[in-house]
Length: 198
Image (cartoon, one colour):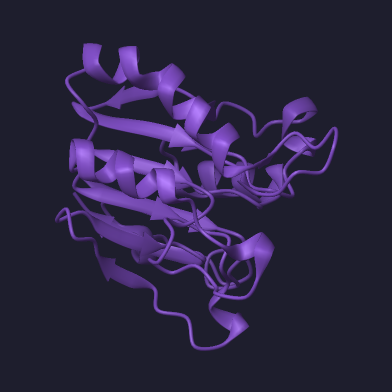
C-alpha cells in the first residue's frame, strides 16, 4: 500500500503546484496533525482517496470543523485494506482546558485504555501520532517538542512496522526525519509530506 503522509506544513508542491503524477498510486492519506481542514479537504479531493488523521497541538478547531469525509482515528485501532493503524494525537503540555496537550502520565493512560482494543486486533501495523517518541526525532531542551517515553514502551511491546509523526518541523534546524527504533520500527517525521510504501 502506498500512503501519502502529511503534517504541520502545507507543502507548496501539493497545494500551489499540485501534479497528479506526484501522488500516483497513493491509496490512503494519513495526516499527523496541525494542518487546516481546508488543506486536508483539498488533498482528499485532488488525490481522490480516503484520509485518516490525528490532531496536533494546534488542532482544537478540527473538533468543531473536521475535514469532510476524513476519519479521525484518535484512540482507535482503524483497519484499512488489512493494515491496522493506531492513532494517538496531541503533544506534550499541561495547559488547563487545552484539548490536545497531554502530560506523559495522561498519554500513558490513553495507551492503557487502548490496550484491550489493541489486543483484540492482534496489535497494530502503523502508529500514527503527532509527537515523536522520546529520543527519536524530538528536540532536547524544548519542553513542548519533547517526545513521549510511553511511545517507546508501546513500540517495544507491539513492534509495528512504522510510526508516523509530525510536530518537529524540519525548518527548526538539524532535524533527522527518519529513525530506526530499537524494536525494528521505522519512525518517519512526516512534516510537509512523505510517500511511504507499506
